[in-house]
Structures are given as structure tokens and as C-alpha cells.
Image (cartoon, rainbow over all chains, first blue to last red):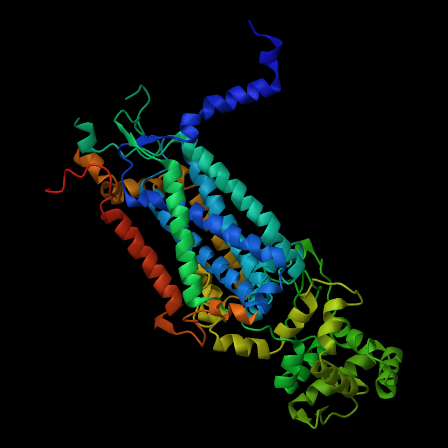
Length: 207
Length: 313
Length: 60
């Protein structure tokens, strides 16, 4: 017998979420025994680097875009931002290689793979707008070069890399939001689906 | 395993083996601490590059004839910006992807008239000066064909351009007010006033540097500095950083295409490379659905290394 | 801000970069090091034994 409480949108959403992602899946305390390789640490390394990127970016935001040119503390925070980005991409690419060689899309994990790829592409765009927002010689050169590629697709009419205000907004609001939401989605899918099991090999089948 | 045939590149066997303890929060905390420390160490050791920006004032002082030559080219329509096409103007069709003129279809959304926006407009904003004022009114009262004749006569003689005692001189005859424009614009640029005039365009606030950046990149000076820093497109510059810092190494494939045929010699390289990269990105995105590609990891067997304990047991 | 001058980089990577050329390939030493480190890290991650699990197979 279905009560009116059962019909509530809230109740139905909660049951759906709890069914797909019970607490023991969201925060597991065990992993399948095959999860035993250093290659598994690069996903969490990427996320940690993202946290440092965002943390250093938040500090840069506190004093505004000119700060890092004028103050040695600001410049140091910018250095943290740069190097955490280098670590972020480093770890993400190793993670991508690892997941490719595991065939990690198998067993209904296509969406996990695809959110990962989109996160990678969104991260490249985020980094690019960061380089475009530096307000120094590097950003002058990068934007005047990059405009030709983007203009040639027609997108330059709306995404004007020579407009510093626009690039800064994309860099500190729109694209980080996209990167974080995509990362969250990716991680939730990993938790829902679990880590991909090994290929069935002759050795495995012999059991 | 089931009634449906098992597809080894699509399906995964159900795990019926054991589980080991795993502390996800501890792992995350350790990773965050390690990455945080590594970032601090790298930042402390190497810092970050910050090469000072180039102003139009810098440019016109370091290379006055390059600046003045660019200014006359903005008037005669031979700079990159003047002949660009969409989104700045209708001077050309812009790049084509086969029969597709993507930029042209979107149209002129950031209108730039190089003669007016880069030369005459800024000159009009200068404080009163009898010679310039009369030159500007001569220009305005002349017909378009007369204006073109003056500009062309100046252009023909521009190989004689000299810069002496703060003056740009060209051995041009019947160039009307154009010599005054080019000389005064150069003086304006050298004072720094042109930087402000181009950025603000009549507004108090502005965060839009489209005009000064386009003007700056039409000259040879910025590219000269970029070449020394190994940043030109032909130098795989897209992935490089100023000085000896690592850059956007993840752009290696994007910048690679520009180095090889047919892109390296194509007038439509930008849109062709973009299209290639979009296609490759879509392939990467849909890789799990593409037979052949999705079988690669199973065939190269790197997974045997990753899961070697599993296969040993 | 002179009190914070100690934050300046110990080994600033200033001065023009060095570049490696092999045919069409043209890469900065800095980027080359980053990419080589990525490949080395990847291979090391595959080969190095992961601690804390079945250690009993060492003899094999």
C-alpha cells in the first residue's frame, strides 16, 4: 500500500539516491582484492592537485588580479597556482593512460570514461583562460595567437580571448565551476559503478 | 556467464573474489598532503615567470619605424587586422573548412575599422593642436578616392621612412594630411597616450584590450620578442612558456599539427587544426563505443602488469 | 613587501630556455623533462610493488 508520503518527490528522490549510492558505496571501507597497484593513486592525486589549484586560486582572488605582479607574497601564491596546475595535468594524464590500459569503460562504465574525458577538455580550457588572464607579456602573446584559431571556428565572435574581463570571468567562475561539477560527477560514477574488474584471462578462467 | 555473449571489450566479469580493507579518507588525506608539499617545494625552488607586458609606448619607443609602418598599413588596409574578415570586419571571407566559412557565417560581432579605430579616432582624442586639427578637417572634407590616393602615395614612399629627432619622415609627395597623422600618432604612442585611448574608447572603465592587442600584434615588434622566447607557432610555441619554465605541455598535439603538411603550408591551418582536434577529442570521448580502438588495451596486455597479483593467484 | 623577499624562488628559471630539436620535433628542455617524468612515473606505477597487500610472493 502506497501512502502519500511514498508519492512525495522528496521521498522518491531520497530512495533513488540511497539505492544507487548507499553510504557504504560512497565511502567504502574495502576494495576488491585486485585493486593493488600504484596506478590507482593518480585519480586521487589529480583531485588533490585540483584542491591545491582552487585553494591557491582563492587566495589570488582575495587581493585581485594585479596583486601577483606587485607583491612577493602574491607572486609566491601565483607560483603555487602554476605548479599545482602542472601537477594536476601530470597526474590526470597518467590517470588517463592507466584507465585506458585497464579498459576502464567496461561493465557499464562508459559514462565514467566520458565524464573523465570532458573533465580533461574542460581543464585544458580552464588552464588556457588562466594563461590568457595573466596580464603580462605571455598573455599578450598567447591571446593574440589563440584568437586566430578560435575566430576561425566562428566561436571568436562570442568568446573573445582579447577581452581580459571576459577571460578572467571564464577562468575564475564559469570553467572552474564546470571542472568541479564534472569531477564530482566522475567520482560519483566511480563510486556507483565501482572499480573495473580485470579482464577475464586464461589464468582467470582456469579457476 | 550469461545467456548473452560476453563482449570482452564492453562487458566486465562480475567480481566474485575477496575484498581488502581500504581507507578512502586516509588515502585522500595523504594525497592532499603530499601534493600540497610538492607544490610548496616546486614553488619555492622555481617560482613562476612574469615577464612584464609590452605597452604600445614600449613598442613605439623601441621600434618607432615599425610602429609608424604598422600605422600606415592600418590605413591602407594591409595589416592582419585590416584584412581579417569576421568577427572584426568584412575585408575577407576568413578561413574556410572545405566549403564552410564558419567565421563569416557568424558575422562581424566585434567591429574594427582599423583606420578609424587605430589611427583617426585616437588622433581626434588628442588635445587641440593647430596642425593636426587642420589635417583632420582636410581629411574629413576630402572624398574617399582622394583619401585613398593620399594613403597610397604615402605607402609607395614608405621605404624611405626615417625616424630622427622624434619625427617620422617619409619622402612622399601629394600625401595630403597623412604624414601629419603618422607622425602625430607615433608621438602619441611614444608618450603612452595611445595605450589609454585604445583601451578605453571613450569609457572610464574597461577590461577589454581587443583594440590595443590587435594593433600591437599587427606590428613586427611583439613577434620579434616572442621569437626570442621561442613562442612562435612555427616553434611549437603554443606549448612553451616564457624563459625556462614548463608550459602547457598538454597542447603538444595541437601545436604539432601546425608543423606538418598539409597544415604547415595551408592558409586555413587554424580551422583545419581545430577541426582535427575536435574530431580526435570526440574519438577519445566515444572510445568505449568504437570497435577496434576499444580492443587495444586488451590486446597490448599492459593490464597484466597492473593486475599481476590477481592473475598470479 | 621586502620582508617577504625570502619567498623569491631559489632557482628561478629565468633567462631564455633551451630547446631540443629532432627533425620536426622542437621542444623546450622544461617540457621535455615534464613529459619524460610522466612516462617514467607511469612505468614506475606499473612496475613497483604496491605495499600493504599480499607480500608473500616475493620469492617468485
